[in-house]
Length: 405
Image (cartoon, rainbow, N blue to C red):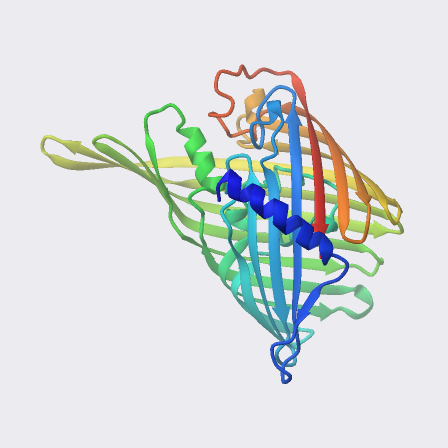
């Protein structure tokens, strides 16, 4: 979608959302079936940073921070639910208003203990992975980016496959809810993974050839404790055979990596307060294969690419003052390679303060300030060409307005 079309969508779509925003829309397809329920949302943000371009060309102020979604659901039979969502977003140079099918799933619940879900499903992971697009579900504009990078949703939000889920009562000891999943990831050509690789080869003369579909499996467990509002979560999984290629005249380099990951979560909701903490880590390891044309024919050279461990964590709290005002704060640290922590390009530390205003039942507005030390998550060499990276702290302002029905 080009910028002209994007403006047309906004000029027509947002007023339409606002006009019907008080409640969801139900469509009756047949007298023998329940209605199809529709929900939608649209958000527009502004990002402005002081020293570096982060999540777009933000030193000049970036409006490339948009989300649009429309979903529908129906319960055609007892214990059966079908739901689908189309989604479009733009964060800097990622996705760039290219609409896609976010999820299309059917689920059947046998009882509280077990159910099944299949199709293009939302991958569970921590507190927010499966609800990243639900702006109503959080105080902040940006989630802690080391844990929930807004550019990488094509890689970790949805999978084509299935899962088994349920909740097991522990009587007075609380309960355990679980989700076990497996399927295939479909990295987009203009998604976060692709843009990160392109950033890494910026200025090298190499051409990026895309990222292939790859399998993933994992699980999410939540322990709902006897203390009302307190829960603890653990998730983990494995992404195998992530393959991509770069090329130059006479040579192609294929890289195949595996990614195990773990995440721990803790949340406590008490009166008008919400307290959260999460830890996330992953490890990448694999092999590279260089295919070189020589006067004697093609030659393949293989080499182990080594391993790299990423770690990120955050702690945060939010408080609801009344029905229209809420405030939140979090502190987060990210280390893209735990063996390299001495240079400011190897880490990013972020202190964020957020204010949320629920102007109506269907319209919210947020303002958020960040003080950031380090540049480990910028990953956009083209946008920062010619900039000097140093050890100074820097600032970013984020504004976001969302309408929904």
